[in-house]
Length: 508
Image 1 (cartoon, rainbow, N blue to C red):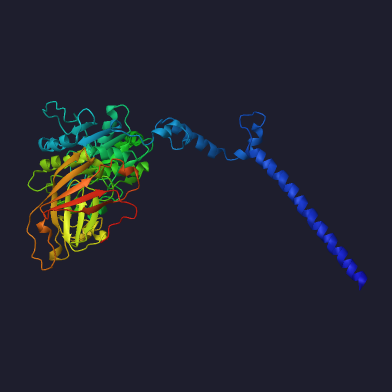
Image 2 (cartoon, rainbow, N blue to C red):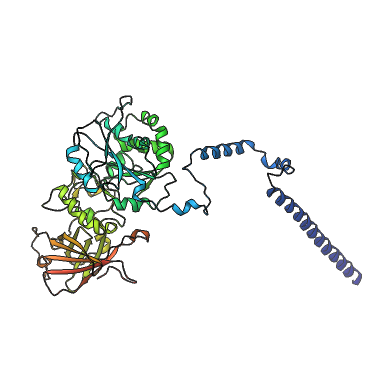
């Protein structure tokens, strides 16, 4: 019994020693193997003595040659830097785009020029903005400092166009980007395209483009408000009337292939879908900026502008189709009136804020610089931030399913038809260092209301106080807050609009 136990103990001890030896041997082998591979992976390729040892690491020479070819091609395009060192001096200029770096290309028609040039004069800054108006034929126009340079587009007769109900001018307009590039302007980072009835908020164009690295390939714009239009054309397309931006490197790539690309799509309808088709061939997707507005709608833009998305207002299009922004004014006069607010705080124009008059149970929305709405009862911010359907879709129908965004009826109850106050004056108070805007009551018929509560009809005007906030879009987007201020005059309401304080929300 004792000898058997001894043999078992001895065998177990030997087994333990064998296992330990095996572990030590494997560890030593693994150490030398790892060291050898580490040395190979960190070998100096410039050392001729070490070069032969790289043979096994370069078994796939075809891959190396492809990568080398790609690198050599990249160096031939100095504006393309897809893999830059973050410490390079170039990164310090990444977000410093200024107006002088932007060139506008305006597609115009000789038939409508006498009327449409008035829109361009409104937003064009003489001696500051750069760009060219491209017409289909030469007109006898005098030099006007309040307009861009006027040029005639090149001949397009060699291009095929087969869309039966369209116009060949779509080809001419689609080539504006390439023609702008060939003008050869210096220090260009962005080309911004628009139509002759597009109204740009120039400062906000700069703000939006400053978010992006102009050395990369960017195609920036927005879709149509019409769901049907987006289905017929593409949700991936920037609508040209609302304006779109193309970075300089992308414009260079487009110019190289655009004429060949256009020939491949003779059956397309417009200019913007031809641009998007070429972008698809280049592999560059649309970067969406909802502040570019095509406005494929009819009627009154009040519902859209009163609930503008929390983003800079960059452009407005189809100004000849929709009603003037302000009542009792022409379309041009209305835009001139709006410019009074834009000049004071362009970053905040049309920005919505929501608050409640708790003592009178009213819901209030401010579209800064444009209008104020006061409605009886409490309507949630979730509903108020949706555009009210004061407009018809592109098929002239009051069909809420025809839009590419959520909408709501103007009112759900006769007592909740909003009372509208349009901006009548806006100025800067040097003492208070804030803007003081007066919004006057637009008197119109309201249904009889049986609710036993105060009526906003008693208010003649609303005074809105706000500090300009030119840096608001350098922070995370957030809707402004508004507060109802005390008033000793029952016919005047005072509101304060500005950045929300800690813990401040829109609630009754």
